[in-house]
Image (tube, rainbow, N blue to C red):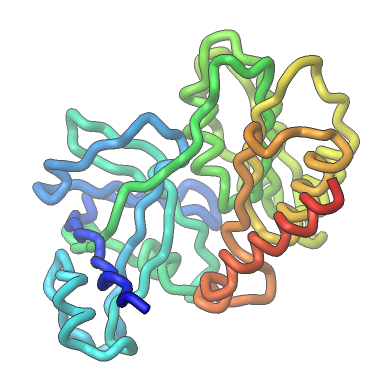
Length: 280
């Protein structure tokens, strides 16, 4: 059997924190800039993302990390850990990239970093990636997500084609987590408050009860994996929406750490797709 070619580590880029802002009790905005963003560019998607790289405790890597060298010279436990975040906005003139973080105190890795970030702090990232953008040919658009998907949903609303018919639902813990999103045609987000209920319950109920407008829909459903699976099932089996019109992803999963979820995410998504396609 022929040997597989060695996997090449993606090229890392460096940036520095320019400023931060507490948007809501659990959302922190970090604006990144610096000469490291000189070659940064987006490709027209509204769900562009980067992978932030965090060195393990005790590892002294200078920014930007040389990922290829680190993987060649150090054991896996000393490799940087990555966390994926949406590019909320990119200003090519000011050369500033905005990234919004859901934070829960000292829980997690990227959230605490964002909460304590200060101007001048250095960061290494990979990307950008992306794959979704509003299709002007769609008759209407459905955007659904919890707070983890709010940056992508907000970026999408701001870049919707003029005159687009849009229904956007975002579930947050309570009214204090709502944000003002300015859109070209004044399209408003329907905010759903969790108020202690399981994540996604309100979103799932809202989508199932929705009177769908006529015509073909382009749907974006992202957030906690459990409710994403349930809404995907509803859209595919009950609404008979083709996969080509859906952008669906479980960003995280309740009850699992980021690392544990990342380890099984691809397999889990493939299993969900197989189950639902066999039932379609």
